[in-house]
Length: 174
Figure: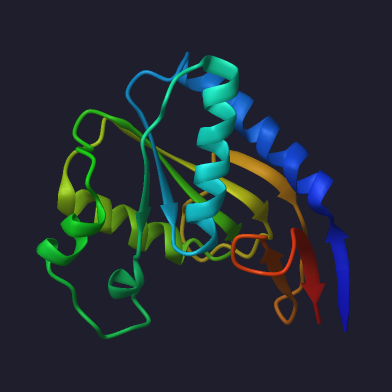
């Protein structure tokens, strides 16, 4: 059973609000780098960077990172060379905003932070997510949340983005 809980306009409004909050908390866009976790986090980060360009008339670097080799539920290992080819922006002394579509247990963000720390020493790391569905397993929480959607463990939140899927929407799947 699938129930649509957010449409394209709701997603757009959430991203706009997230973007304003990031600019406000950072006191501008200096030293700001958006790091999108592949796949959908990458596209959300790009959309946020476009919003920043319109609002602040400034270009913020956007980087995509694949953290699958850093997951604790997979045995594959990666080298710093593989990851540094993905990350072409220097992250030292930068405010990194990790961007993803759904925040669940915290394990994805832990893996993303591990990957970033292998590449440099950011000044600060913040987390921005489109959906926070709860059920933490790690003591990590997002700093910026588009929508809080309480779920049961047997439910799934599916974010669809036009860049990857047919359209923009958020579904609750049972």
